[in-house]
Image (cartoon, rainbow, N blue to C red; front, side, top):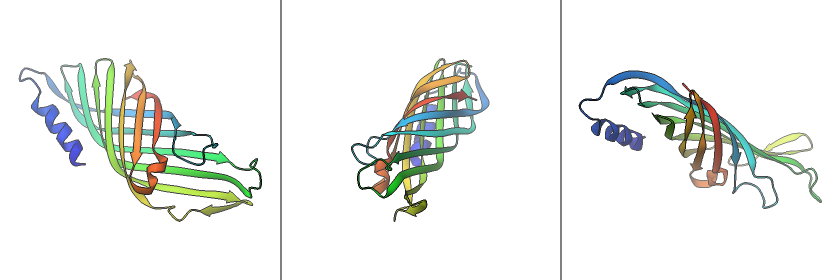
Length: 183
């Protein structure tokens, strides 16, 4: 959180005195096909899906730049089918991350950048014989960090983002190919 305050303070300190500054509402909402490189076993699929965004208040500068600060949320999901594996009673395994924290989104002409941090709760387990067996770390909360960069065309945003987690949740780190709208 303190890093977000520093980013906002730096942005405000470098603004030219002659800039036209106005109040702004906005943010972004994205759908993300994701690549989870560390999760599961080597032969498991590494692709997941996520949905997230930042909504907040901020400033617009000379109609070419906007900086928004507000709550950031995201939900990311990964699973693997184990039913075809030799001698496996496990039908599938899964990991879901529910992120909630603070974010900064800055739009510059046809580019945007975002930063976020906060807490994330993991939901993880396996399906065996139709029963959902939770892993010991299920329901635990970890810190997350997110950064994204991309381009925009009108209200449509396209880019790439990276979300990392602390401690045991580091196995859920992922890259997202972001597609969505800027508000």
